[in-house]
Length: 258
Image (cartoon, rainbow, N blue to C red; front, side, top):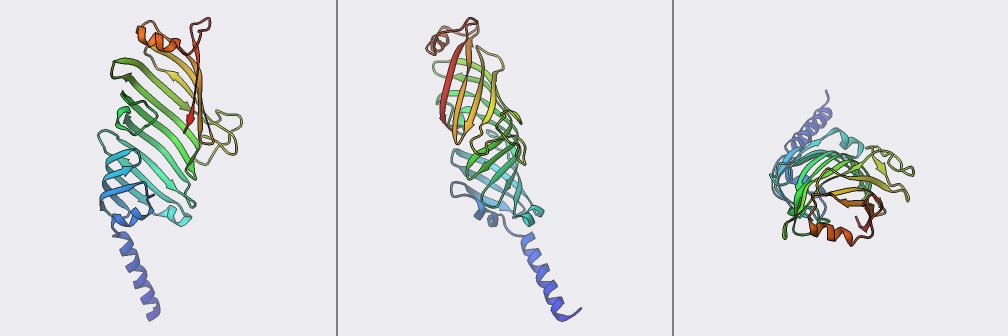
């Protein structure tokens, strides 16, 4: 072997050793400005943040395991895990060129009153469980989602009022205008909408409806009725929605930004 080849091989081995032992903070440059890792430890490939500050709150004990081979295809793929006792979860994240983000096998348990989900009113309690097969963002906009989100034991704290448990399910092919993405799920290419089916899992409210997400806007419509165990105040609230049909159900609609 020539001297030039030996130098090249030594340089390659040195670079590989440096990358293998690269500190965790090297990866932090890839984080958006709205995310901050406190007290990073470990290596570039397997690291941990003592605290991860995100726009909706703080997660404790967040770790990652980076996959090297997708880097050759221009993907930054990592298994992420939160060991936070108040917001445990895990997912595989794939960051593509251009900033597109694909999350697969996303599982998480989040308390309603921890601030992670701003669409719940202040003063509510309950637990949200996420079991999503795929969720894709393009340029920060949701374009695909598949799986279920379950809210259990939703209740108002003061004065106390239980609402029950509910499930929102996003299935592939839920919209005839939709397309299937690489990660699966229902995609909002062009003007197509993402659609999810809402139903109750028991409690004082009987609910069924459809959530439609299009171009960052959400539209929820359906039917609601109070079961016999519902209290008088809940009945009054539902009566404001409008007149009931023959089965005692009332039509509701909600619209907002996603």
